[in-house]
Length: 403
Image (cartoon, rainbow, N blue to C red; front, side, top):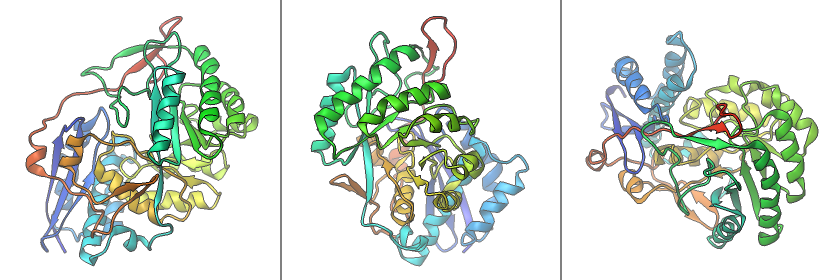
């Protein structure tokens, strides 16, 4: 089953997406997500100029060999652009392989380990009362797990607090916008938020919170300790994880479960965190960590240390990635939870998919492959638009401080 064609499709139905489509001489095609938020065209160029010429004529069944060929053969390994491109190829090839077998991808991976995939939604509000209201709304929709984020008094805008109810797009400008940040105000406000949310929903709803890498390790330890009475499912991205050892300090001071990894590109980015049991959930994704082939290795390694998966699932990942992730989630034995931010109606129309939501769980469906397709004619009606995530500066002196 030889690869005879591959092309990159860039479109913007509500936000920018990059999709790779691979076609074989058997008439089968598969697609993979290649979206890298804010750097989309870098991956599109990498695929078009460097990867696709290397794919033509290769056996599409040789998924592992092609993965190793693209990873080892480039000499300059890893990094977000390279690993996103490899992930797109890998996902498309798994899609083709499952279609050739006539089965849903999760069956090809080894069959399902659960009946459905528990997901969490995003409840946001300008203040505590509005966030509580949104948490209760998600509970009414059937969610068993809810991420709560709130605006902080004295700060005009806080990243992660959306403008919509069920979905939002944080990339807000053709050039990065800049906003003030105050760690002190945030640390005082967040425990009050969760005191109110927990009182409103009771003990049976899983609550999550994303710090967005804004704290130093000791500040994160302080927050984790302050949130212990509210029994969070996890505290996410407490501090930048380039220095994996920094999580040891957080771990020493709090029993709040820790999650990290949505911006990791390979198993090496999380090796020490997992091996030393400094985290409880690894959040690597299909699209940014080298595809299903690499994600399986990360999950197997994590399982040795009782670390569970909790893959990123925001709107900067296309439905193609979500579909592939759900097949992975249904199979992986050490699954924890899956993030689920709903896409816009325009996005869903461009990417018709088999996955469905019911009572707090997603199911990938039983269509052959990963169950997601792309309407190329409709995609062409939504041209690429430059869009960047905002950045923060400390309110008191203007120092650049994450996003």
